[in-house]
Length: 398
View 1 (spheres, rainbow, N blue to C red):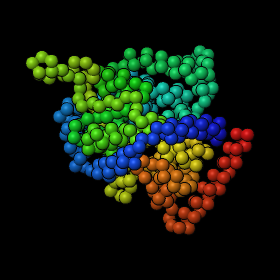
View 2: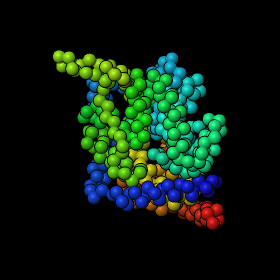
View 3: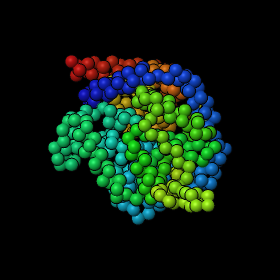
View 4: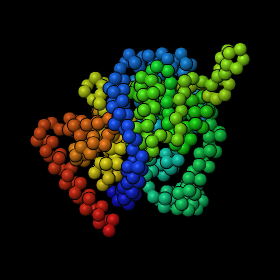
């Protein structure tokens, strides 16, 4: 257990909470209700998914449906062809399928363009938050790892760290012909792909000759208005900002109608857009009583308020699936019941601070317990462990 990382994590989480207190929109409750309504009507809605796919194809976007992880990886490998360098942006779905590792095993060089994800990639570290993956790492620790990787002395200064990593990312962006991103939403009415970011790296990645988008079937929204409403809630809960720096809406390849109002495609990059929609048991979960779990928009606000996560950090996680919600989801799609499910205190703090009111404690009880007696055992065990780790953490902080 790295308690220094947990202390750094708490400090970062507190700064987000402070920004949230300052920037909370007056109509936040109304926005939440709109988001809940759209998620309930869209998740598991095969008819709406079919409409979205039809509109996307009409807009000139190539669409693949992938039933499971390996199928998605195989489709991506086919789309990459003979290319050996790929630049990509942060994406929870590509992490879910282990895309970077799979491509590297095939001899490709994959460069994460998000500063945090590139640092994680270089340091071979685990993430601590879906939108702030290196929140738990101090500048000192990052500088030490980067100095070894780049073989140059790097100061323990956040600005210098970002400058060095940015230069690395930019040099690779200039060489790559194919970019891979995730997506925050797919809109049915317009047939659009919606993405948000703060760094500007997605803008660079999507402007390669071919843009491959990897996301999941539960990211469908009825229209752009409902998607933007989600982005505002996502941004506020993830960073304390009322809107991200950038919102990209893609509704087809580059084209012009300047001459006689006739559309000519491929004027600038990208000249080809490929969308891969991953199922990976989401349809099964929606049918079998776990549809609510798929409403999640990945803001990570639950982690900011989880007592166990704020005590042991990303030890309360399974691979890239963080906290109670992440472990619950992992256990359902992988058919594995991780021991770390036992760490959930079922205190309900995640539900209280979730914009969708997801009852993660109830879901975890349903997965891990055979009845009242076993749940009492898990309740007592988790609280005893939490008290023990709290005492350890306090001794390190003194």
